[in-house]
Length: 346
Ligand code: NAD
Ligand code: TDX
Image (cartoon, rainbow, N blue to C red; front, top):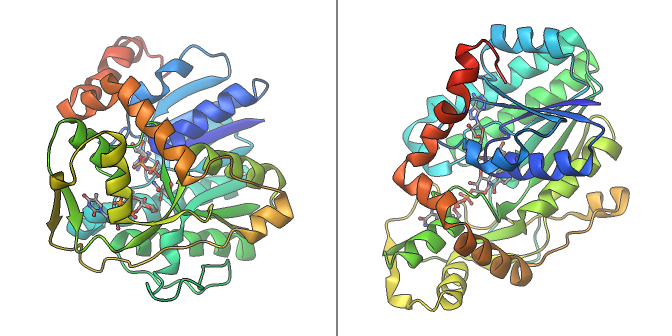
């Protein structure tokens, strides 16, 4: 089978590329990524040269580019990770989120409709369900919870989900959607809470905690998300949505304190700052459907995943120090400029 995986130079897409390319040597994987500020080819550098892996730079919202690529490659499966993914950025620049997350998704869907596909899989998020109150720990998001978004980011993701389901109902496109809780682990861009805390604490810099730090997130180790998507793509039913989460709820303040303790850094580094506008209070997933119907089980809990993550950031300082310094953005030129000049787009 030939896969096009979009956003494979980002955090989760990059982990998914490692997971799939190594697990399925008989399948072909094309990593399609625009390399925005969030895309980092150093994340997938170990895959370069593998016979079942290729990188192609391009924009999922560029209709001509996408249609030409599909005409040439005729993929069997598309897994769409490509997105603008940071809630804070969506508050300052919503337009970029509409372009990539909504128009990029409909462009891919139209290409799938035109050239045929065995499966289109949309990587979505728990944020499409909005938030839950802090004083109702008995409530969880299920696949039938109404969509009720808060931020421009989550509105764009929910909109994309609705298009994916509409293309199934209207055109019979074989689609699936997974909605996952907050991920953490290797290759997580240090604008997001966990890698931000690790990288700043190691430099003895202040840790900004929004509001009182009482907001709750449901954390999942990234390879558990990858194994869930692999299952949904291969065994999930067409037209279905699957929630993914491991029941690992923590307040932000708990997360920050746990990391500071592990790194032997003082809590005095914590600085409470003005809250995020529209800040979702609590996310909590009910993953019963994927567990019972597809037999998915996460391998890690928060207590086993966090030390593993911290260890990775300590052993791979170069990876995130290149991001902090901006060095990572030179990688594409270093690796690809000669090949592009010679007319070989990876
Ligand atoms: P990320 O920001 O780390 O990576 C996004 C990738 O998409 C980058 O490599 C970027 O270069 C690429 N990209 C952006 N715009 C593009 C475009 N127009 N064309 C092609 N490529 C483009 O994001 P992430 O955290 O890895 O999230 C991946 C997906 O998973 C997103 O769809 C996100 O909504 C979803 N998700 C994320 C989480 C989480 O906790 N991070 C949880 C649930 C769902
Ligand atoms: O500096 C910070 N201080 C802080 O208190 C940052 C960056 C975040 N926070 C808080 C805001 C959130 O309550 O920490 C929590 C986690 O924040 P983010 O890492 O920005 O993630 P979140 O907004 O929860 O969204 C993430 O999970 C769902 C991903 O970025 C999304 O792409 C995914 O869909």
